[in-house]
Length: 276
Image 1 (cartoon, one colour):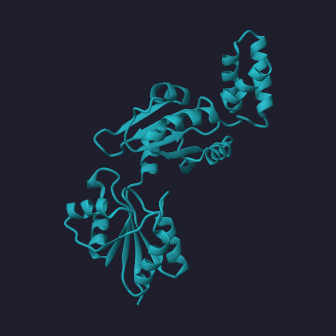
Image 2 (cartoon, rainbow, N blue to C red):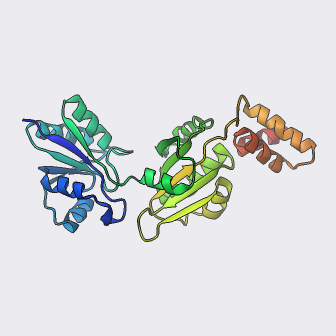
Image 3 (cartoon, one colour):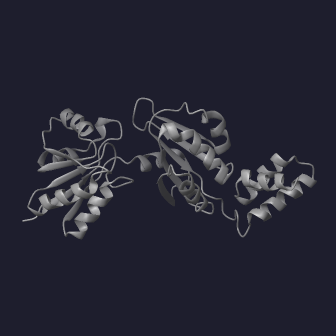
């Protein structure tokens, strides 16, 4: 008889957030697939759980996925966990779940903490419609293309980011979206949990030196209704020219045009500079 896969959510900081059902599942399964067995061992020790583990992460997921599903098909039950939060969300567990479905293995959810949902709930942003964008690529072209594809996105956008990349990411977001509202949520459920409501331009000024530490979730406001409706970059630049004729300096005119159009202030300003 075939076993089953259990997708188990684990704490994102506070160990008290591990649910009783998650404890029961981790205690009763035959083995655990863990992103980092050292991290998971600390969790298991805290709850007095002793279970065999296999490592399952980005660089071994192909061969380990086959091995894990072979064991499940042979009758064993497996719980997959990530270092923090729900497996398979911006996580290689996605591939194991897909492989289980392809091989006819039943997949069960044992819900737990999720950084993106917790951060969204704390953000004060619109929550009715949102899009999760995960981590931005470190490749400059992929990163630029990703952000370019979101310029007309009206839903609230959620990004994950590592602290050492935050400064550059804030600058890239400001370049791409102009001065939108943003909430920076860091160290969720931990001692130094912090929710920072600000704007992109202010965030670049305040946190562009990279001093913010900890696990970070960025919640970015979508484009306001009507923003960029049929307005091209050139049309935004033309609007800036009109403000300049009214006496505004180029930088202020570009900022106003960016707010009105949704185009990036930097791109508008660049067009204005090219005409000088």
